[in-house]
Length: 491
Figure 1 (tube, rainbow, N blue to C red):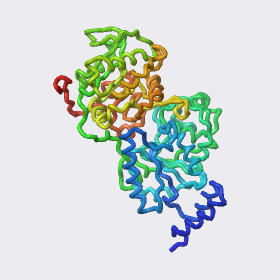
Figure 2 (spheres, rainbow, N blue to C red):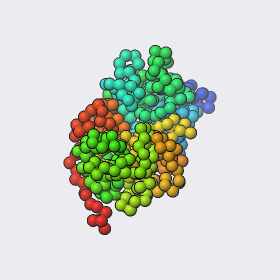
Figure 3 (cartoon, rainbow, N blue to C red):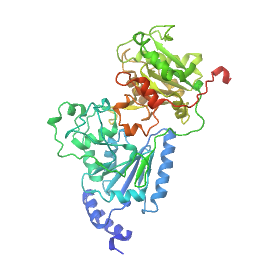
Figure 4 (cartoon, rainbow, N blue to C red):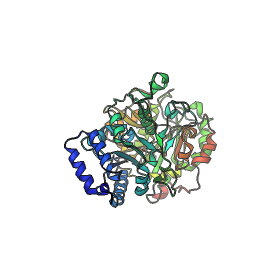
């Protein structure tokens, strides 16, 4: 037997170094003393603090521990739903600082990150990771590339030296302790959090805290020589396969029978200008599936277009007054107060109603919840906040509606950004914000096609660059039957 294959020798050498070495020296001596082992990896499960997600994450961590126990002495696993995780942990970057400090005295060689949907073959993972050097700034994952400049990445370059490869989070990704430590020391000035996958890769590439937008407008002024580019690992898979160490599936979780249409109220924000352009498209696609549960809210009542006046003026931007009027109506109108969920969309949102009803079955409407695709305004900072983007659809539970209305909080101005107001309010009122990448603020071409092919998408937004009817047919339409049962029929 090889001398250093014995766990006993590893423990002895580690203990000798622990009392006299710095964190960096500890990693270097440990690497010299022992071949790579999953003993040297901390597994981080990225999750959320809502009860449903906490339970999913705990079940996943228990599964990991059972499988790892056959390979390592003491599995090291963490979940970001727990109290150790910092503000804005869904953006991942603030998690790095906490991990760097948490393991400063006795660092692992690697941190491996995964999502709730990630499946891991730990034997194959060990065989893969042994090929990469943890003493360098190592960053490995399933690399994604934008085929065209994407609004979700501030139209970053898609070719040349400033092309950014970014990890597909559900496939899992790994960062050496050395890289985590170096990135943790950067004071990040990022104003908006849109795509954590891209923002993490961008930070690693440029290793500067300067806001990404500022870098993108003057790329040639910034050096990439000190940074690290993601290394693509083909065994970190999207689809399952014989050689895969990881894979995933982003289907909607099954939580029993889907909700009924009578459980939801859908409020579509529109304006007179779009009564006969956007609304017909909506009605010809997903509006039909919404039945009597949908209302088209405008500043003008139009019987032909089917709109309801909210009694508030239209604004050119922000639409906070219109959103709040829908919220207030959901809290006071008898025909709506019996519903469990409020769905607020734009008039150019595309939505799968059957899939939404299936997803909502997983959550308790009495718990204050705001759900959709999460963006952040300085979400990694204590004074920042997370919000749900309006274009992809904002979902509020009955508990959230009641808490917001009872608080007396109202829009600062009629044209304040409605989604940001809701996010700021949700933080102040301790409302659960649940992020789901099945909702999309942009059109499909802004996202990698290989990723969309693996998703059961719930929404997209905008009509301007892709035919919305084709988008609906290709990405959102299915043959599930919706139970068109009214409240009176249920009674």
